[in-house]
Structures are given as C-alpha cells and as structure tokens.
Length: 177
Image 1 (cartoon, rainbow, N blue to C red):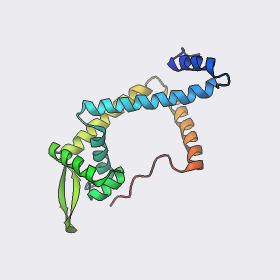
Image 2 (spheres, rainbow, N blue to C red):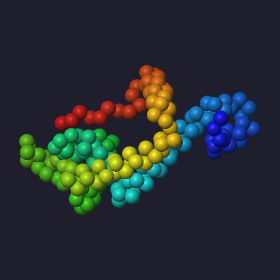
Image 3 (cartoon, rainbow, N blue to C red):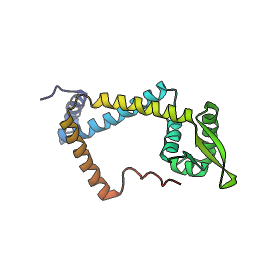
C-alpha cells in the first residue's frame, strides 16, 4: 500500500464530521482536483519563466492552431478566445509591442485586418510548449508506461461517460479559415 498523502489526512479529518463519507470516492475526486490545481500552478510557472502571461500564451496558441499562414481576423480570434473585442484589441496591442504578432491587411480584402503570428511569437510559443512538456513528463515520471496507459484508459472512460451525458468536455478546435 502506498504511503499516506495529504489527501488521506483530508479524508481522515472529514470522516469525523461526515459519517457517510466514502473515502475511496473522496480520495479519487480530491486527488484529481488537487492534480488539476498543481497542473495550473505549474503551467503559470512555466509560462512566467518564459515571460508570458496565460492570456498571451492563449492568443499565440490559437494563432498556431489556425494553421499556416498563422493569421486570422481579430473578430474570429476574439470568438475563439471568448474574449470581448475591446479586450482583445488591448491584448493584441501589447503582443504587437513584444513582436510576437503583427497586424496586416487581408490580401483578399484590404479593408480588413488580420492578426498574424511572427517568427518570434512562434518561437516563444514553441519554447513554452517544450517547457510544459518537460514539466508534465516530470509529473508523470513516477508512473511506468503500463501505469500511464492504464491511467489514460481510465480517464478516457470517465470522460466518455461524462460526454455521453452532457456533451463534449473540451470544445473542438475551430475550423481553419
């Protein structure tokens, strides 16, 4: 049996107050919640290490997801990011100052502007992705390949059941223009 962890102490504490607490259910759900929190803290840290705020990374990430030539209309980017256009304009101004994006006229309609990823923006995005991969690999490092496969399968099954009842947990990436 593995060594007790902080979640075991949490369960022991609350078992005194909640006589019908299911320790296994509480352990599974609480461990998942705490790992999600850890993943978020880790992501914020590896983004900050590269000088990026989460919203900056999200803009760059969506531009990369748009595919070559990595440019989209600001209105579409705002929709994808679920961000108010005025907020996005301010963010794009800041990203343009860093040299990670630039605005250009749409070759098909010179009245429209497009947001385009620069080589510097693509490079910083790739660096952060690589760092994130290293951090996530370290988190899963204690698991054997077979344990990772088992965990992946179990989580896939839970997601499949949840999605069957309520629709996709993760929205599809937008169609590339």
